[in-house]
Length: 322
Image (tube, rainbow, N blue to C red; front, top):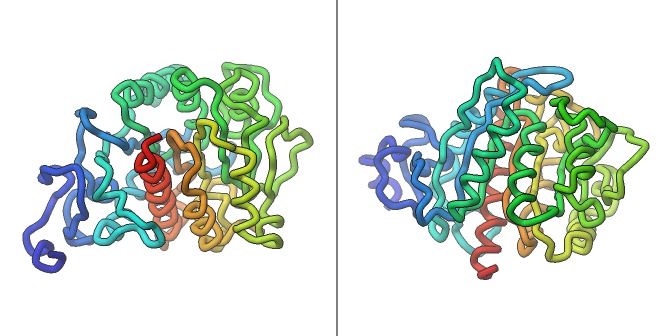
C-alpha cells in the first residue's frame, strides 16, 4: 500500500469506487476534491457531505473568499495518506465522506442567495448526512444555520473568530458578514445561552448573552481551560461549529479579508478542535479563506486542516452512536 498505490491511483475524485479509505494519489497531480473524496451528488449512505460555497458579496473589506473552496480542496491533497493526527480513529476509513461539489447560484441575484443556500443544505440534511461547508465569506453561516435550526431547533453555536459578528442590524434583508449572528439569535436559529465565541479580539458592546473566550484568555489560561469552558456551556445541545480563519493570527493565516493581530496560533486551534471530541456537533464550516492575499498558500492549508478536524468531530460523535 502507499507507494505502490501512488503508481496507479489518479483522479480519485472521479475514479474511486469506495467512499471510505485513504488515497495515495500524488499530491501534485490529479483532480482535486476535498481529501480526494469522490465527487458525488448521490447522498445515499453518506455520513458527511463536503460542499463549497464560493460567495463573497457580503464582505466589509477585501474580497477573494469566493476562491476559498477551490484553494482548500487543493491544499487538502496533502492530507489523505494518513489518519488525521491525534485522533484514535481514521475518519476517512470509518465515515462515508463525499465531496458534494459547490453551491450553484446566480452571482448577480444576491438577494436570492440565502434561500438558495438554505435549500442546498436542507437537501443534505434530509438525506441523512451532515454538511461541512467550505466558504466563502462568513455570511454563509446564516442561511446554513436556518436549515439546521429547521431540522434540530435552536442550535448551540461554537464560533471561532476575531470578530463577534453580532453587531446590531435589524434589517433582515441586508446581507452582511458582520451581523448575521445578531440576526440568527434574534430569529431563534441560535440559542445564545448555550453558545460560545473563541478568539475574539475586536470590540462589541453587546455579546447578546453569548459566552466569550477572547484570544488573550486562550493565551493566558491555555487551551485545556478553554475547552473545558466550551464543553460546560455547550452541554449536549445540538451544535454547529463555524470557524472563521481570521481566528488565527495573521502570522498563521494572512489570506483573509479582515485580519486582526493577537490571534490564535495554529497549534492552539488544533489542540482545541481535537480536545472538543464528544460535543454534539451536527455540522460546520470553514470560512473567510481568501487566496489572493496569501502567496504562500498557508491560509488554505490551515483551512483544509480545520475542515478535516470538523469531519473528525462529526465522526467521533457518529462513532458514539448519537
